[in-house]
Image (cartoon, rainbow, N blue to C red; front, side):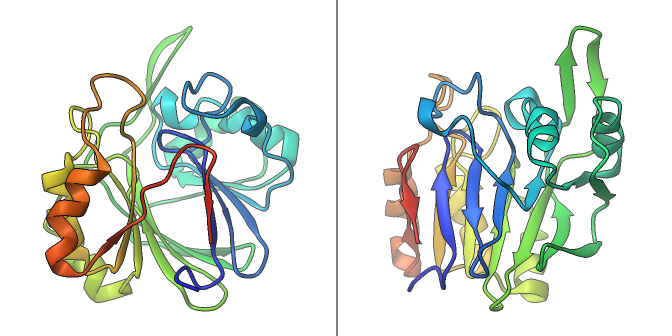
Amino acid sequence: MRLAGLSVTWLGHGTFLLESPGGRRVLIDPWLETNPACPAHLRTVGPLDLILVTHGHNDHVHDAAAVALATGAPVVGIYELCEWLATRGVANRSGMNKGGTQQVAGIGITMVDARHSSSYAGEDGTVYLGEAAGYVLTFENGFVAYFAGDTSVFGDMRLIKELYAPTLAFLPIGDHFTMDPVAAAKATELLGVRMVIPMHFGTFPVLTGRPDRLRELVAPMGVEVLDMQPGQTLC
């Protein structure tokens, strides 16, 4: 199997539900209730073993507290974001910072850099929530995936390749707030991955990047672009 036992369901925008080769259910960047790209029947995700949050923008963290409280699953994010979630009643959390690694639910979680801002706009105004981050996930069978979150391309992606050698990358391609397909193709080259799942595109008109353009650019590298539709599962 090309994903080595990993199951990936795209819930739209930057939100994904993974099932690890060991059967652990992982929700990344929970934006469900008001996410226009999330199919209605997937807005309730069921039992979880882990919640990962890359940064504090509403379209990535809006439902994190509600889902954490409903499921009891531990939340992993950068320290300041996890402390903010504590003010919303989330007790089961494990804040960390870039360069660190921890094991949660049998999955190795390494926090790496991302080039983006991080804040939450709520009733009390805009709250700073630490820096944006990405994750390198090492699953029970040794399969390694890189989840970029929202980011521009940056040269130290080559260090992610050298240190962790991911096979699969989840990369934003929408432009305006993140990389476009041209920059994502460069990121693919720097990372040395064999497969890319595009994300953070098409949700709003301003997010103009499209997977076909990325596929055209990375085809000479022999990289497979796994173009998903919201609600689709790959394994």
